[in-house]
Every structure is written in C-alpha cells, then in structure tokens.
Image 1 (cartoon, rainbow, N blue to C red):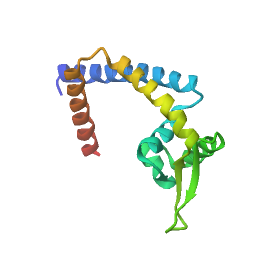
Image 2 (image 1 turned 180 degrees about the vertical axis):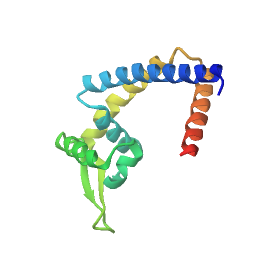
Image 3 (image 1 turned 60 degrees about the vertical axis):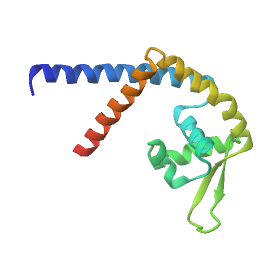
Image 4 (image 1 turned 90 degrees about the vertical axis):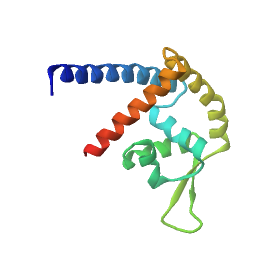
Length: 147
C-alpha cells in the first residue's frame, strides 16, 4: 500500500466516523426528547413498518444482541406500545406486535424523524445521496466478503 493510499484510507475512515457521530448524536437527541432510546425506536420502527416479528429475529433485524431485546420489549410493552403474541402454530415462538397506542405514537413521531433525516442530509444533492449510497454499499459488501 502506498502512502497516498494509506492516507486516503485513514482520511475516509475519519470523515465517515465524524459524519456518523454527528448524525447519531442528532437522532439520539431526537429520540430522547420523545422518551425513547435508539434501540426502542428501532424496535418500534421495525414493527411499525414490517408488522409483527418473532422476538428471536428482532435482534438480527436491528443489529442488536438478543439478550437486550427482552429488556427493550419489556419496556415498550410496559408503555403499551407493543404486545407479545404467541404463535398459533409453534408454541416456542412469540411475536412482538405494535399496539394501537404504538401505531398512534409512530404515526406522529416517524414523519418528524424522517424530516430530521432529510434536513441532516440536505448538504448533499439527490445525485450525491444516490452516489454515496452506492459507494457505501460497495465498501460494506467488500469488507463483508473479506471476513
């Protein structure tokens, strides 16, 4: 690897890390203002958009360790946003399902979250956003293939 190659790789890492950090901080602040942590929002958002999900699969879908899912589901269930539903066909499977209260909450919250993301990404044109998506996908897939 040349010095230029190493330098640009390090610079890219720093720029990606800083961009991720500031976006993450802004969205986390938004979630906290609305009484959620990022994991609670991720679970609610998954159920809101995808419907009921087996508890055992939620962690993989939102990239969270399965041990933490039980805690998050308990908290959201305690607030009346989700409920546990037993499978009709397999006693070993329990689903998490968003409740009417959870749906109402997300109907109000999600559009505001979406607007925040639009504002955060406004520095890029539509073409630049699409290019960034393709480049980051390419990077992620190439790293995944290394493992």
